[in-house]
Length: 135
Image (cartoon, rainbow, N blue to C red; front, side, top):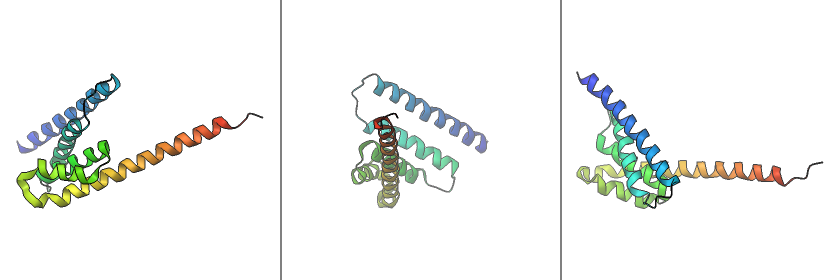
């Protein structure tokens, strides 16, 4: 029975994450002027819960803090503020959550920075090939 609950919970969380990402993308594309923090927090908690279900040795609070800090950092590019937000939102666990929130914020910042660099390289290579005269 426990494995059935875990399997259905994983499927449910995957549906929630994908659904929220689609709805948030449509809202941004249609000009919705909401802030990035609440959707990032929601998606981060869902991803943290999914990680805690898949990796059963990890605490749900710690994984929620990692998810919140990582997604908020990706959306805002403010790792310290995102780690602090994660620690405050998962305040029940106290200071034991701080390392997990910091790891989440740093990993979110590294991923966002890598994606931004990749995008800038792609745009610079496509721009430089367009600027060259045809001979």
